[in-house]
Length: 611
Image (tube, rainbow, N blue to C red):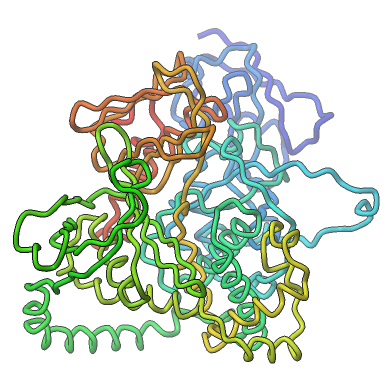
């Protein structure tokens, strides 16, 4: 074949350097092109990380055995010879900025895996990268230099940096605001998304489906998750009651105090405890085997759950206000009767709770114990409120409703632990009266750093302080690990937990609506009043696809239910990745937890057709 000249820009020579011209033929493979280029440069150094980037096509030429002809590269191609790994400034949820080398040639999914491996964060599939919010610098901030930890010399295979940056884990970082449109595409590389060397990115948890959290092995994961949850609450990205906010404030205050006196958590090394853990696990297993027969016998018979409760249906005219009935829980359904004596006959109604939404509405001080149920129905969502008389009754029925919504009966082994968890949460919300006032005299806190802005406006600091310290009396005995885990548990129990929102236009509709994307379902929300109109669960989904020409997502569910919508405030690719990502998260199991099926992730999130 005839020889022709190919010009290549070498990034390492600087922006003003002239391109290097080499003589090539169309049957020359990319490896040969690089060899010729390096020989002409006559610079002795390690070029193994370098590759060719085709700027017009936004493509890395990584298959070095392919010829120029196969790549369809011609003389007018603008090729750049550059390193595949470049430094980026990575902002963590706790506000700390790390400067590290990230891979610019692999899909973002793989780049995140490398970063998480270095930082010691398990289950990297739950995280992703997003563009930061552009901040306007004030004049007085011009001379202020931010602290950046330079880790560019640390290889991506390292996993020893846990203690390095957790020392400053409780720094009060700047207010952050997260937007759906800022997430990077997991299936494309950083170069394809216009990210340059030394650019700033955020590392955040994207998929709120946290698998196998172990406080012993997940120190970094738990701490960064706590920081992200904390800011979501402080910035009012998620709603909570006033009592819950005071409890969140108390836990933050306690975590801040205890972290200064429990440095051992920050420098714990799980590897040193492997032998002890293995022995303990073996001991527990042996004890478990001896008692497995009795445990099996216990779970074969479900406990009885019957009591008088009050029911209210806001959208049903026949039930005005709360009315008392005798309720009976069986399998995943509740039935109610006029009285206990009539419970041997047919119920007034039986409600199947499988697939329903369960939300608490509790105020311990006011003795208000409500369970809000959203029951899926063909015409939308049926709303039902159950009012309990006391804490014990609420804990039992709330635990039962939560299990039933997941398709589990009262015979499930987690029923009692769910009750205990709810009672523990209620105990934390109890006020201590004089104890809290006494504590206020010798405790110095900044309440505005612990609660969201709406409470800054509603209460003065001297009013907030005793309330936070009152709640603090219920958590001040917790260890640092237990306090972090309790904070995350309460956060995950909030009704709006894990929801990401996008404004959409449903096919056949003339008005804009909100689509809530949750770990296990999609929620159609009325934009004008905020009411839930309909819920669709992923486990009822048969298939979905995207019409990339008109930017429309179409989903088919069981029962011949079809929906289609176009996205107005985010690219439909982001919604497509969210849905596919959550379905991927649901496929994880303990048997294969150490093996991440990257191919399946890209199949579900990256292609034009998901299934």
